[in-house]
Amino acid sequence: MNSSRDAAISAAEASYDAGHFLRRLESLVAVPTESHPPEHKEDLVRYCREVLGPLVESLGFSISILDNPERQHGPVMLGTRIEDASLPTVLIYGHGDVVRAMPERWRTDLDPWTVKVEGDRIYGRGVVDNKGQHLLAIEALRAVLSVRGRLGFNAKIFVETGEEAGSPGLRGILQRHREACAADVFIALDGLRQSISIPEVTLGTRGGVAMDLVVNLREGGFHSGHWGGLLKDPAVILSHAIASIISRDGRILVEGWTPAVIPADVRNACAAIVVDELPNGPSPDPQWGEPGLSRAERIFMWTSAVVLASVSGQPDAPVNAVSGSARARIQVRHTVDVAADGLVSGLRKHLDKEGFVDVQVLAVQERDAFPASRTSSEDPWVRLVVKSMAETARRPPNVVPNIGASGPSELFRQELGTPVLWLPFSYGGCNQHGPDEHGLASMFRDGLGLMAGIWWDIGSVDPASMRR
Image (cartoon, rainbow, N blue to C red; front, side):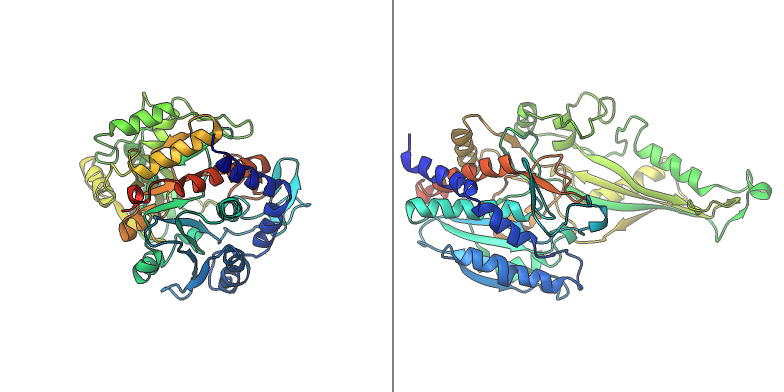
């Protein structure tokens, strides 16, 4: 048993028990960092310069504020602590921006910008997405420093302020400041775990591509009594087109939208994932989606296609007319095993084959698209983190090939050449992005211990074996 490692874990947990984590979380949540520029850019800058920056600086980091090349969007706070150029460097990622607070939709006794503790729940906008999670990484560093006096590795803390808006300008920031951000591994604390009780290592994200299906036959509408049955109904054409894309039981029917080959390690990882059923959350519909796949396989190794919205006529005030047009937004989430640049053209080819010449396919670029990403489970950094978590938790963690959602993983891998690991410390019932967002105190406390163990172990390995 490593008594020093145990002491660092105990120091992290004791810091939580003393209230230090909660007090620092209160100061972070109090800054209204909604990422809807330009009206909130000053708050994003203040979060980096005046609140988070000094907290990171107190751990011996130098602080830089990296301006966004897209000037209307918020900056990045980069904290740097170089102990020895020969040591490996860890880039620790988080984001300080949050979605809209929507205070009118929260419980009347809750305020999004004020932390409130009720039993095991800690309420506040950003508590889990993502202020509490990047604070967890920082406070675990503090615990290791308190025991060892140094980290034993170089650390860079990279906190952006636009993730909820699609990370606008992020690639440009990485290109401008590649040397300042250079690292041997990218470790992010963000996202939801599959199990409250089992720690998790996630190795990437799915990519997201949106497209509009448009049937535009004529200007305006025509009286349904005089023209119904004579004029093509765009809503009917659109509904049949959608039915040719996604079957009535949720199977994807477009060639090239699903993986042709799934790596064996991805299948094996999915088979080993343990998932908790949440008492207040929805349960998967067992007959929906690709037949023969488990819940984990459907979300982590397969493609999903969802109709986000559709409209024809005036749904809020229907009139007796055959509409002239109809539109639907389709979102496809895919793994690295499906090429993103073939999704739109593949749909066009499919619709032509099915005879839907009246249906246009328009690629949608509402915000910067996140490419799909996946780090190999055999990467030395993955093995190190998995082993560390297993030692601390006394059970193996879930190893998820890629989460079902999208994120900026691949931008860091492409620009910095690092393997990417996501370590989530929230759960599916946390109301992330909705009213009454909350984290679990027990998960934060355990997370501090897990992260202290990881930081300790990174500082204990042979440095040459982890340099890239």
